[in-house]
Length: 284
Length: 245
Ligand SMILES: Nc1ncnc2c1ncn2[C@@H]1O[C@H](COP(=O)(O)OP(=O)(O)OP(=O)(O)O)[C@@H](O)[C@H]1O
Ligand SMILES: [Mg+2]
Image (spheres, rainbow over the protein chains, first blue to last red):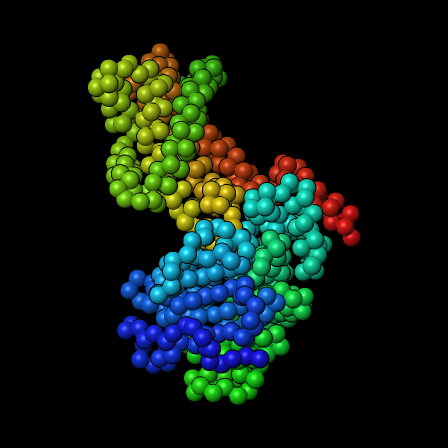
């Protein structure tokens, strides 16, 4: 069951710098699962210079859940995702992944011991819109380099584990190819394998198919679908609302740096907030 | 002087001296290339880092990019040596002058090469939990090195040409040797044509060398030598794939 309104905390805080259009009550995005979440974001605010782009985000992602973030360009979806693995440093609030907490903390709560960014990042896998494969390394070495440098595996073990990950995305026979010799869809699948091989607690996808030719979108979505079916915890930013409807346990509509409305797949059929309605009508 | 009085045979007669001159130029430039590359990389990092060190790097770069080789080597050999009370050999003075000048150029070359590596690659490394140092050495530096390589080659050629000015401090490089032979034979056209040809040939060979190096660093590697070296890795992967399928 998906709750559309927060049950307990966070307390509604009207921040002076929040735009007038933003709803006064922050929405806690959660499926309401009572188990401790894998990712817990509280009162996350982020500014670039003097411009605040996230006005207090509250999000729970529980083990095995697939959370979809969608919304107009510039609404802050990527920034939320990049805050989860601290590619963006939160200005206030906290980010907690699998018990490792980071960030200045939540107003009114006692300060807890804050973890190191590196410890948190190692629990999170990320797939980028632009793949970001290392072009001077083969597909296999793209996967095995972080296994050696982060997990300290021997070259032989890392190669074998990397090969297994490539097999998982259907690219074992391309292991010796360089990124420049692979199609966009194949590159993205290698990038997924690279992130997966680190055994992350949660996988983040930032518009993983937006840079692909239309005919290559399917193969990447198929791999993601398999991952979802295998029970991987995922947070996905995507404009593919059809795909979102298939995998999304919790769909989160963002606009202007805030969460506007959340829900299960019925959110796409019966959005209640007028801004969600407008967006879904425009995309369809 | 009419054509028949040009004695082209002189070049062959003095080939040993001329080649030794070239060798000296290559030695001075080669040592300076290593120093300038290391120092240039350091300067590039300072330049991209925090103030006030970045300002110092900017000042250094702008001073030495603007100084002519001739002035620099005289300044080192006759000026700085007095100031420090050290008697530099002509070889040392040449190396120091080239290192000072070219580390400034190298700094700019490395800075733009490092900046040409897409920031997303660094972010991917961070997202994978890789430490910063490892990201630099395994992800950013190899790509930047390949981007910088052709320009480093041009710098090496420039260094060799600049050694010609070191004749003023008496370094026995190509020009000095040519002057000495000319003093005995009075054949300036022949001898300076030979000197020019030596520089042009050296530049040509160095250019080819750097092109080959660049090709071998491309992915996938091009060229026989690099396929032999880097192909081993690929064959190891292919063997593993064959074993697993
Ligand atoms: N590094 C940055 N410096 C300054 N402003 C930034 C930076 N990154 C993002 N922003 C701004 O923050 C806001 C949110 O950006 P974000 O990339 O999170 O949006 P998004 O929802 O992912 O959009 P899109 O669908 O276009 O990817 C935008 O106004 C953007 O211009
Ligand atoms: Mg985005």
